[in-house]
Image (cartoon, rainbow, N blue to C red; front, top):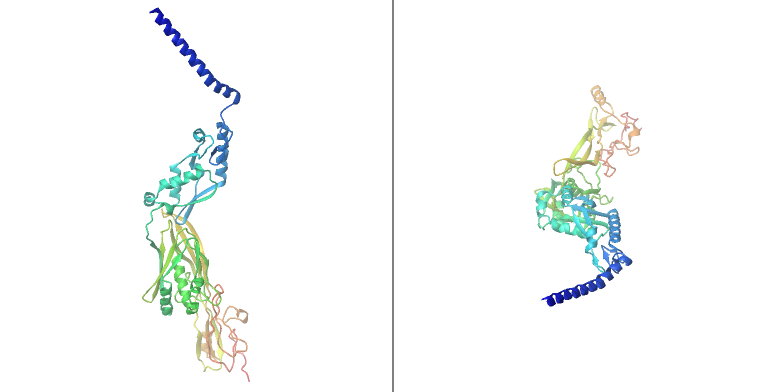
Length: 455
C-alpha cells in the first residue's frame, strides 16, 4: 500500500513538472514578447473603411478611425429627394462603433466600420419631406437604411443623393395634377392640327420645354403666331399651379380675347418670342392636349406633389382711356365719327402660394406683374361745332404733342385723320394702326385745336 502511494506521488510530481516546463516555454515566450516588444500591431495591408492600419496598435487604430470619421462628416453631404422636395440628412444620425470595428478587424485584411442608424432621426427626415403614412407603408425603409449604412460604413465622402421614388413600388399610373381649358374657336383648324401632331409632350426630369423648339421639329410654316400664343397661354395656365419654373414669357400690348389678365403667354415667330418652362423635379411629366368642342383642353399628368400650389390674381387696377378729338373738313356740320373705340388699361399681379401637407402656407412668391396700357378713344368731328357740341368737347381730353409716344397721334404730312394706338405692356406687342378716311381739308393737331385749311 505504501509503495502504491509513493508511486502515485512520483507520477503527479512528474506530471506537474512537465506541465510547468511546457507552459513556461510556451506562454513565457509570449510574456517576454509582450514585455519587451509592446502591444500587438496590425499586419501589412490591414484596412478599415479605407483607412490604412498596417503596423498600428488597436488604440492607435481607433484614433485614426475617429479622425477619418470627423473628416468624413465635414466633407460629406447626404440629401434625400421625394417628389419636388429635397432635405439634407444630419450625419449625427449615424452611430459609429469604432472600438468594436477594431476588435473584429482581422490583421492583413480589409473591412468596413460597424455603424448603426438612428431610426427616429430618419423618420423625422422623411416627415420633413412630406412622406405620408401611406407612402411610409410602401416605402422600402430597410433597403434605404442598408444603402445609407453602407455609405457610412465605407466612409465614402462627397455629395450623395437618394431618390425615395426608387424605394417605392412601381405603380405604372399617373394622375392629373393640373388642367386648363381655353376657347380655341378663333384658331379652330390650328388647334385641331396641334392636338393631332402634339397630343402628348413628355417633360423629362430636370429639363426645359420650348414652344418654338417644339414646332421647329415639325413644319413650322404650318403655324401662325396667334395659334401658338393660344397654345402657350393654355400651357402657362396649366403649369402655373405647380413648382415648374417659367424661364421665358411675353405678353402683348393688348390682352387677347382668349386670355385672362395674368395668364397670357405670347408667341411671335418673326421676333423669336418664345414661351419656355422648366421641370426641376427628378420625375417625368406629360402634357396632354385634346379638343373638347371648340375649346383646347390641356392636362399635366405625373406623380402628385407633396405640397399644394395655388395661383392668385391680386392688386388688379384699371386705367380709363383718354379721348382724343380730331377735326376734319370732310364731316358735315355737327357730325362726329369714332375712329378708335377706347379700351381700359389693366395691371395685375400673379402670386403662387405653396402650402404644406397640413395646409400651412410655406411660401408665397410673386410670379409676374402684367400691365396693359389703355387704348385711347379717337373721335373725328366737323370743323364748325354748335354750342351743344362744344359742351361735349369740354368733357373730353386732348393730348399735347409732347405725348405722341403715349397716345394716338397724326403723322405730320400724312393728311390722314387716323391715329396710331400705343400700349406700354412689355414692349412685345404690335402697335395697331387703323385705317381712316382721307382728310383733304383742314387738319387738327392733338390738342384739339383746328389748323388753318390749305388754300
